[in-house]
Amino acid sequence: MQFPSPLQRGVLVQRYKRFFADVMLDDGTAITAHCPNPGSMLGVNAPGSVVWVSRIESATRKLPHTLELVESMGALAGINTMVPNRVVAEALAEDLIPELTGYSSHRREVKYGEASRVDFLLEADGRPRCWLEIKNCQLSRTKGLAEFPDCVAARSAKHLRELAAMVAAGERAVVLFTVQREDCEAFSACRDLDPAFAAALDQAADAGVEVLPYRCTTSPDGVRVDRRIPWNRKGC
Image (tube, rainbow, N blue to C red; front, side, top):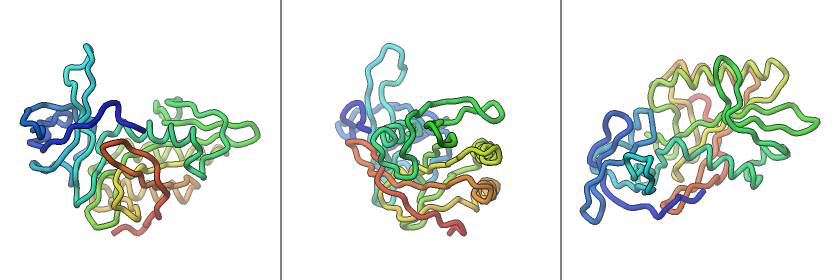
């Protein structure tokens, strides 16, 4: 996935009210950017961090800039939670995820569970349907280890229970963690920040839900699926 326009580099002044980020661009321009991430952004919200923002001119947008990347522990981390679905859609179309090839239809935002919408429903004649949830992962506190979530994620735990219900009904279900940073060689649930989610992930896996952590190449040019990394089930 390529960014819609060349990214501009700057320094994070502050992230506040969840969806706003004040940034000083390298050319000295002070801007307020949309921050498309509802989580805590632990580890990627420190004032003074080098950041990259995109810009889209639109009459319907109050803020033309969007915060996309933050430098963290020497690596670029993608914080835009809208990006993973676009990256995975591209990867599915190009058969870049071996575990998810062979499906002729990739439908998005299909209703399921308790008033939820699955990110993708994969279908093909002669195969069980595959219910696919995508989670964005940008947190790394230990060198080489990606973690999710970065705060309490009750909604994500609910999705795991709904995926398990689809498996119980005879269908296939997958949760794919899109790691938007290149410095991670393994993935783990963040048990200290949200033990309930970690337990829900364990229970979902035991019920037959497939857990696929995929690292991405992440740069100011774009984000693209790279390769699967191991799930460290015990955590750090």
